Length: 190
Image (tube, rainbow, N blue to C red; front, side, top):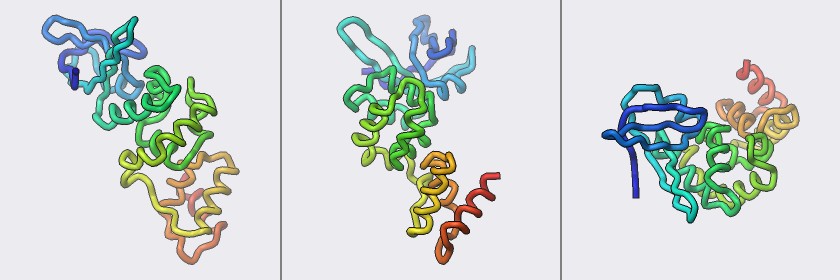
């Protein structure tokens, strides 16, 4: 099994890179965020995953090990194959994707091209308990009922649940009502 590939970026397309490793060109499908970091002619190392089917062998490349782990978690969900997993990884950076899953933000997940509402719901159900490692310090705790009400109000105003949690996460909520928390969250958004 391949773990990583090092070499020179020979070719870039809109969703893949070809890495020249000692005269052999390995084509790897990559997310939008990995592709942005791959400069033509640069020497790089990508974590990789090889997918073997009866009709094809495909290589998938990842700039970070955590991105690869998120990919593997996504493809473990019934009905989510490599293409849908890469659509998800290209739609949101993996920490934001993990936060959307953790906060059950179906609205944000459903906006990702190639990811419908039912698939987004299945991803949340299957992965909610498994993605907390990707959010770590990013995921603020919800302090009290007033903060939860402020988050609900912000989602009603059009913010995703993940954004609303992040907006209210840095606010000292103790002793404040919902309106005060919303006001501070919106001021911080400016």
